[in-house]
Length: 68
Image 1 (tube, rainbow, N blue to C red):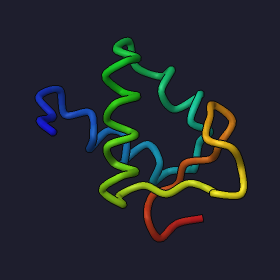
Image 2 (spheres, rainbow, N blue to C red):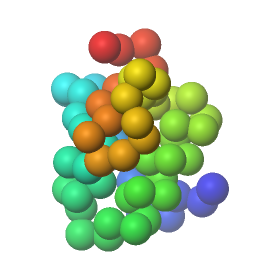
Image 3 (cartoon, one colour):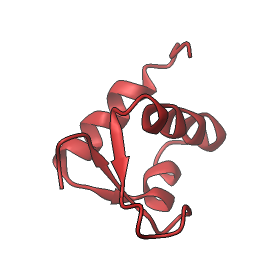
Image 4 (tube, rainbow, N blue to C red):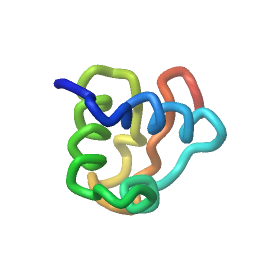
């Protein structure tokens, strides 16, 4: 996935400071649909992690890989 806006680095950097809920994370920038796609892409590439005990949705917590 091409990241012409540099969003993936920004997403990982934001999560490095503290985990966030998916809904809060994707509402930060102005380009909502693009950010959602990049977060899901980073989840698939195992650069981000989620708590699988919760349903996939806006309330799930997203973490950098190796962080809790």
